[in-house]
Length: 214
Image (cartoon, rainbow, N blue to C red; front, side, top):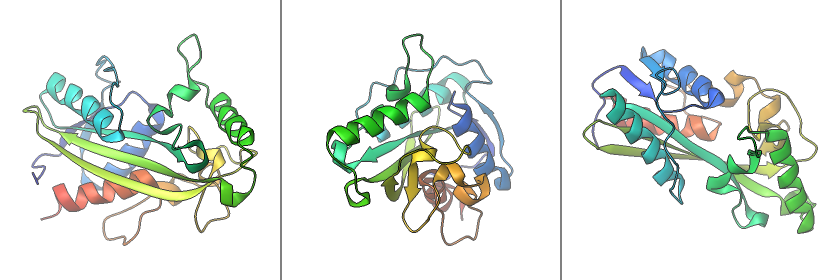
C-alpha cells in the first residue's frame, strides 16, 4: 500500500453532491483540493462494468491531467429484487434526452421496476449503497477502497437533504432515509470515530486507515 505524502490533491468528480461530501470528509485532514470541475477537466467516459473500474478511470484521468494525486468516487444503488440494478448505471437511470439528470425521475423508475416485480414488502426491497474510492497517482499507481451500507428502498421519497437516490434509501437500523438526515449524520465521519454510516464515509475511513495513518 502506498501512503499519501501530500495534502494537495484533486477531487476527480464533476458531481456537486459528491464533491461536497468528499470535501466535508477530507476537511479535518488539512487538504488543499480542487475538483475536476473546478479545473475544467473533461469528464472521461465511464466504460467500466464495476465500481472499481469506473473509479479508477476517473481518478487516473485527473491525476494525469493535473500531475497530482487524485481521489475519485464511483457509487451506486444495488437493489436485490432488480438483480443488482441500477448498480454501476445508477446515474444513467437519471439521464434525460437533453443530457441533464433528473433523480426524481430515476427514483420513479426504480419504484416502477420494483412494482413490476411485485416487490412491495420491506423484505422484498433490500438494497445497499456502494461506494468505491480510488486514489491515483500521476505514475498510474492506484489504491481502491470499498464501502457499503445495507438498507431498503422506501416509497414515497422522504426528505430533501443529500442528493441522488437518498430520499428512497433507508439504512438498516434507522427510521429515516438518507434524504432526511443532516450531512453530519449521514457522512460526518471524523478521525477516531469507530463507525461511519454512509457508504462513502465507510470507504473514506478505509482510505484514511490505509493511506494517511502512520
